[in-house]
Amino acid sequence: MPRVKRGNKKLNRRNKILKLASGFFGAKSHNYRTAREAVERSLQYAYRDRRNRKRDFRRLWNVRINAAVRQHDLNYATFIHGMDKAQIRLNRKVLSNLAATEPDTFKGIVEKVKTYL
Image 1 (cartoon, rainbow, N blue to C red):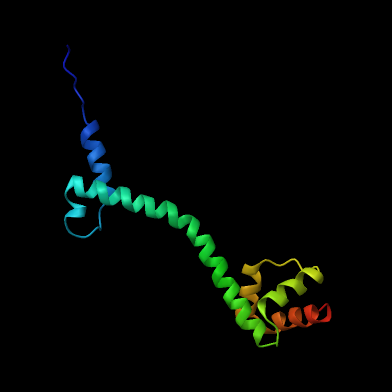
Image 2: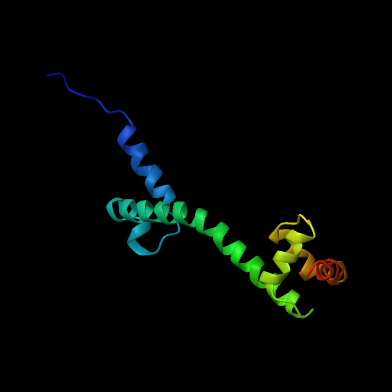
């Protein structure tokens, strides 16, 4: 059976993992075996959390809208229902931003929604 000459493939594979693990604590950034385990785990977390980030932001926007709407004697669910009735098509990200940065504009939206409730 002929001898297999691998060239740099093995070294490149190891260096790729160690490069991904740079900045990890202790042996996880130096030892290949522990680095590989840590990188696999970190990539799984990254994959999961790219999806969770969308949920977290929507939850944050809802909390901000609720806090802003309660200053105008409404609650979140009633406000969203009124937005639907008033046919105001603004998403929660924009509403949250308006509530935080432009309270006068947000107050105008709330007043318009109140007329439809």
